[in-house]
Structures are given as C-alpha cells and as structure tokens.
Length: 421
Ligand SMILES: Cc1cc2nc3c(=O)[nH]c(=O)nc-3n(C[C@H](O)[C@H](O)[C@H](O)COP(=O)(O)OP(=O)(O)OC[C@H]3O[C@@H](n4cnc5c(N)ncnc54)[C@H](O)[C@@H]3O)c2cc1C
Image 1 (tube, protein in one colour):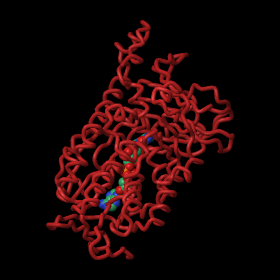
Image 2 (cartoon, helix red, strand yellow):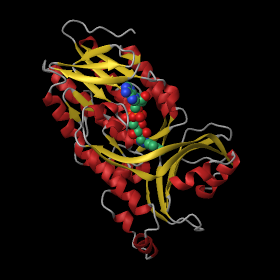
Image 3 (cartoon, protein in one colour):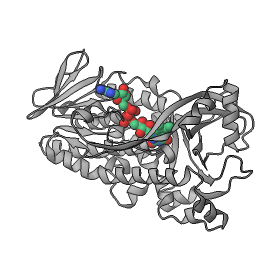
Image 4 (tube, rainbow, N blue to C red):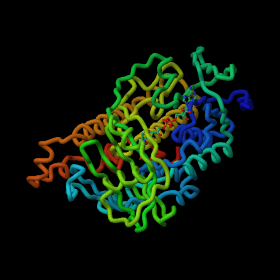
C-alpha cells in the first residue's frame, strides 16, 4: 500500500468511502491546503468510476457552481445537459391525458437573476472519472480497502483497514453510504424506514429531441421521471428514466425480455419522442428514508448517504451530499487557517449546525411529497379536478424542486455559491 506519509507538522484527513461527494470534499481540501493536509480516501472499490455507469443525476445550480470552482465543470460539461423546463403531472396510468399542474423553467432562472439554468442532468461516470483524476493530480491518496473499525485516540483517530493495516488521522469522514458501518460503530442513532417501492433507472434512446425538458409524472405507484441527457445513443437522442414502482410489482415488470420492459416504459412515457430504445439498464435500487440523530462523533463526521437517505422524487440526494462536502470543507479550512485542530469538537459542531436542519427539511419534504402523490390521494385529485391549482400554490415547491430552498435562507456554503474556500 502506498499511503502518503504526512510531513512533520502537517495534518491528515481520512475518508471512508470514495463516492462522488467524498471525492469532491477530498479535492476541495487538497486544492486549498496542498502539502499541509494529507488526504487519504479509502474505498473497497478504489473509487472506480465504472460503478457509476448508466447513472445520471439532476445537478442543481449550487452543485454546478461547486464543480466549476473545483475546476471540474469545464471537464464534465460535455456530459451535462441543461434542463430548460420542468413539467410535473398527476394522473393514473390509464388516464388518457396527464394534466400538468406545475411547469417551471426560464422563470425559475430569471427569479434567481443570474440566467444560469436551474439544473443540469449530468452523467455520473464521466463526473467520477474527472473527480478521481483531479484528486490524484492534486495529491489525494486513493486506497483500495475498506475501513473496518475506527477508534479515537485523544488527538487522533485510528482507522483499521480490511488489509489489516491502520492509519491515523486528525479527522475521519464516514462517507460509506446508507448502511454506514462507521455510523453504527460510533453508535450514532438512525431514524429511518424502507419504502415499499424500488427506484428503477434506465437510459432510453429516442428518435426526436427532448428540447431540454424534464417530465415527472406522479402515478399512483410513485413518480416516473424522464430527464434529458446529452444527444447520442442508437437513435440520436437520449433521456434518463427514474421510475418508482411498488416493490411487489417490480419483479414482474422487470423480469421480461428487454422489449417487454421497454413496452412497460412506453406505457408510462407519454411523450411524443418518436421510436424508443433501451440504451442502458434497467437497474433496481431499494428506496429508503433515513437521517442520523447526530452528524458527528469524536473525530468523526458523517457525510452524504451515511448521514441522510432521501426518496429520489426530487433528485436531491447527491445535491445534499455535495452541500455536506462544501460545508465540511469550509469548517475544516476555517480551523486549519487559524492553526486549530481540524478534527476538534468546534469544527464538527459547526459542520453539524450547517447541515442538519437542511438535511432534515429536505428528507421530510421528499417523504411528504412521496406520501401525498404515491397513492390514489383522493383529496388531491379532487382539488386538481376542481381546478384549484393547489400544488402550484404550495409555498416554496418550485424552489424545492430546483434545489434552491437553502439559498433562500442564505445558508448555502461558499463553494455552492461558486466562491473559494
Ligand atoms: C434511484 C435513485 C435516483 C437518484 N437520483 C438522484 C438525482 O437525480 N440527483 C441527486 O442529487 N441524487 C440522486 N440520488 C441520490 C444519490 O445517488 C445519493 O445520494 C449519492 O450517490 C450518495 O453518495 P454517497 O457517496 O454518500 O454514497 P455512495 O454512493 O453509496 O458511496 C458510498 C461509498 O462508500 C464505500 N464504502 C462502503 N463501505 C465502506 C467501508 N467500510 N469503508 C470504506 N468505504 C466503504 C462504497 O464502496 C461506496 O463507494 C438518487 C438515488 C437513487 C436510489
């Protein structure tokens, strides 16, 4: 193993998990502090970008600004498609038309006054490639191993790896995903449940252009989203599908031949985008809600899905995790610039204060929306049929969908505002 030995007097950050937000944090800190901070990312998959193949994420404007600040946007913009308009409808599968109750696009951009698209769809694999390359070039060590144990030892924390070796750092970031072993080992409580739904992800090719429009149909089994990707694929144009289905029905829906699966997608698709083809997937993802009772323990910070898991109804999980990375980078940098301990309780308290409320608010809102729409919610349908436009008037709903809810409270970390650390 070739782990960088910290120079005398320098600090070391250990990161368990090499997912996208974790690599973004490693890069931000290494760029800001150079040799004064050794950063080691430890992941059994060695942060291999192939694990992200076929996935695409809605990246809100704050996340895009952060990638730009880290010098990554120019390298990934070819894998990103701006969303020009978002159209949301509510109906049953057999309904001949899907009544639209919320549309937003340019006015959401104009409301923010910067002319920047409110979101992009970005393909995860090229983003992971750019992040891993930039991390290595900046001097971040990426180790192929798991962390099995972590023990605080006064002014440091010791992480024991699956290889039997152990590393000491000032701070350990647990970014080891929803089933975080390190969160459990630190005895941090977790409030959560599984949804009786699965998320089905696929890339669809189509003959006609999507024009940058994103659609989300709220069907009784859950939302079905069609999200624009960069042109390409066998038919010239592509979209990403994020399809929520009842777990009990998913097996039957997905066990058929590819053309049967495509026929099920077409039944829900409703857009006139010409001939369709299945380009990638479908892949299946269990869906859950969860939030940690604390985002920190002694010399340990939880980040991303290890701290909160939310329903993909608004495509905000990665955006939340990037905001965690930006906030933790800011707290650690503040301490290092003052010559203070980057793993000390003040840093961890500042991080938790910055992130817990937003994470809880986002988790609770996504859960509420899923409950409201993923059934035959009669009062809601009645309100729609009476033309009350009730959802369009729900305060903050557009802001929520464009991931700008936090910006309204001015609590966005510097990197998400596009500013340096
Ligand atoms: C169907 C679906 C659609 C989604 N769509 C969107 C979207 O459009 N926009 C959006 O913002 N978000 C979306 N999300 C959410 C997003 O995928 C997650 O929030 C995000 O990927 C979390 O990243 P993470 O790094 O925290 O966790 P993960 O990506 O799970 O990474 C955890 C890493 O930790 C490693 N690891 C595990 N155990 C250990 C250990 N013991 N030691 C060291 N390493 C370990 C793993 O190998 C892995 O690399 C979606 C989620 C789903 C399910």
